[in-house]
Image (cartoon, rainbow, N blue to C red; front, side, top):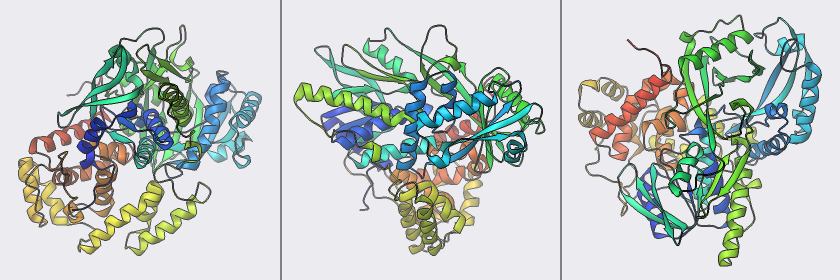
Length: 613
């Protein structure tokens, strides 16, 4: 039997069983970046940790941000000095511990005669920003004149341009950052399971001592005991406080942020730009992977927290802002390839609008002992986690005399980050690219994998070697692809058998995910019909990143629905067949998961309030 990796899809029920059978020091509800950071910090100190999320990991806010680990220049404008100082320093730590998911991004802030920022205030603000955030000398701000600013980005509006500020932010893959933090937590012994929903808290003498959890996929119910329970549910923290009977005093204000994606052939942005809009808000336009994305809006939100969507007013607001700053482009709704909407769980402040509210975080503890972490920013996740775990450690020491290690995460690489540090990461990528080429991979694909997966790329190379050993052509089996793409008239189960027969695959005949004995991983050759660029990351996502649906892979493990949507449309059916074979889906499950992905593709381009004919 093949060894099942600790964070494999097929270990979900085992992990839930372990949670039920092991008294925990800390149980965390919420698998976004905040919960993931707390899990890693606590596990690295020696605590026994469990974590659940009712959706996939990072399915909420943590995959729907502006995808920047930034120092918060906008908060300097609001005189939020503490936030700027803390998160500015934290971004350097995030980069050092995970250079494969975070990279420096030069940012241009154009200065206009009628704009929010003047040349003097921008220069002074960026200088203070450099000081507060502890910015490296090579990344400190430069001030540009109008000609130099246009040289950096020729698409900018020329009228009224006085110059620009040039500084460094850090771009990230927010979903993969969350996953890598969770995988490192799992490597330190944390038990983390997606698609596991809190049903109710358990109490003894008025104190919360655990929870009842329902596995969304199997329906199985488990009961977990823990010395401390942390509510890190992002937009849902008030829902859990209500369940605990402790929703009083401070509360959340939910706001929605929408981003649009345009192909760079239509919006050939040379340089990331941070600009102010006509209503005084700030907005980003950022190049990434052959696309340009624009965002964000900031409006109060009271809709579906699980599936927030772009509306027609959201879309028009962003288009107006872009065309105001880049007037020669004339971007229209037909140019939008994809979009995403996320919810910000802000701490409500009386009399302040969404864009005026501080992004600070706060910890609340109820009479029952439930610890809630609210607010905060992606950039500050590690420091937020340290604060929460310090509190938990102090309480457990006072209560039971147990002592734990101090926080270790400041210098602890996350999964994939064990590559020698940020300064040498590029040379590491080059080395691993050469190794990939020696396996027969195209140089571009090997470089892409090395940069994306960091020190985990060796796992992908092992899968490539397996395919080579089995004699599977790297281009896939064209006939099998065609069989999948032409299978719409077949029942989903019949399609599985048809493709399996075409590729000489023996499909599984019985359910394999049981708590008693997970099935061995199938041969990589079962991916026949998919090229290496799809089959290897897909198998890796299932074996090492707990991907259990098509959405998990195409939205959060790869980001392809956002930045490579045509790739998703091309490979979704063959991928569905392979996942069905690997995870032994029923025909109904395969149809349902494919339908869910189709809805994601639809919602990425069609506004929620659009009238469809």
